[in-house]
Length: 360
Image (cartoon, rainbow, N blue to C red; front, side):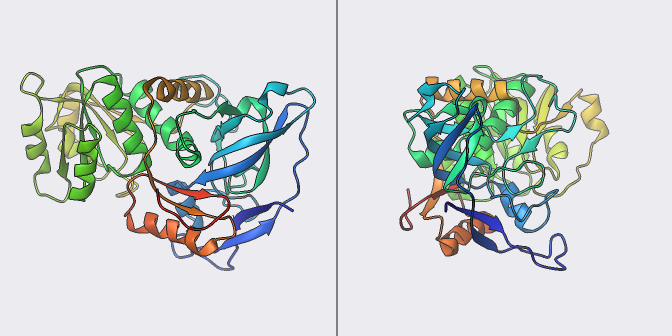
């Protein structure tokens, strides 16, 4: 039988105190419906939500649904009504359901459901074979390796919506600050911004990560550990455009107090995550500057298609920090979660289904 990885339940575990072990389980061989595709999975990628799930810090954890929302594979069979041209195609899966094309948010009355490890949707990508509706895959970009393709969907979609839909500043010559460079979303935003000809600036607590970001096209960067880092960043901005147009932020914390010193009047902060704390302060000085704070999540099916088309056009490859091989390689897969715990990764963490541990 095909194998999958789920979480193993621990009795009495409290949110934030528990850490659910990984469990290798057998799953039924999929039987496709009329419009389904059978996909042999070749790679799957981690996201922070997977780490939060293991700590019971994410809603509705499941101990039956395979983990992970990102995946790449090859179509090995098609349902009776599905397009036969899918057979043999290399594909990536859309990481969510219930959101077609409304720019405001998901159309589904039950909300947006993300793949992997929860009770809200019975599908995850960390399994050897799966069944998926043909409308929920796109052809994998030909210029990407399996690991790179698996790394793209969730963070690529999240970054795309934050920059392209929500910021209103995705234009050549505009100044954007991307916080927490090294994470998958932040790196995708950097790649999109550079491809558009924007002036991208980054923050990190690691000089090595700042240097890597500059090698990818960032115009500058500062360490958020430095007192008054916003003054240093302000000195790096172009003389003919001395203010930021937008900030794409995944940290939260004191970003508003920094933003009032950096953003132009009417500037936009797009907030897609709060790794520092679940709350942020809003200052009166932000009102006086007419700043806007916009929450952003993943994105719609249309935004996913647009994102894939853009990375194909611009030949963008997601950054992969590290891979391990083998769905039965639980020790090294756990090691990827430890990379995430310590924040040591620069890019995505990927499991290639079969073989032995490797690095890209």
